[in-house]
Length: 97
Image: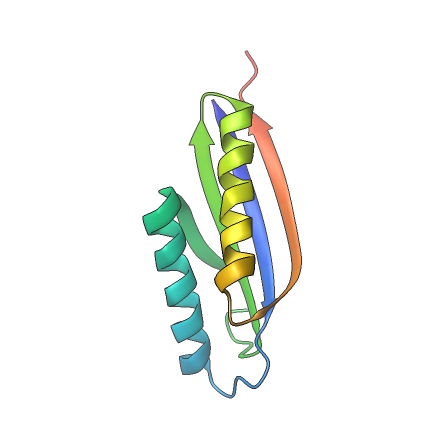
């Protein structure tokens, strides 16, 4: 089994409340879930209203599938996000027997 994790960190310019941050986060999370069938959660900075960090996780039986899905998810986020993407990183975990 191959597990892939994509970490996305955003800077929310002009955001003045946690309510506005939640609106942006919910929109991004729902679009990622619906489009790529991945698990998505806010993983850091829950109390910071101008910083959003999302973790995107997927699994498959081949590394290429995991990498492809995460790369497509990143491309979509870059294209549709109203926030500035300041950092992203990908980790791949393999259950080597």
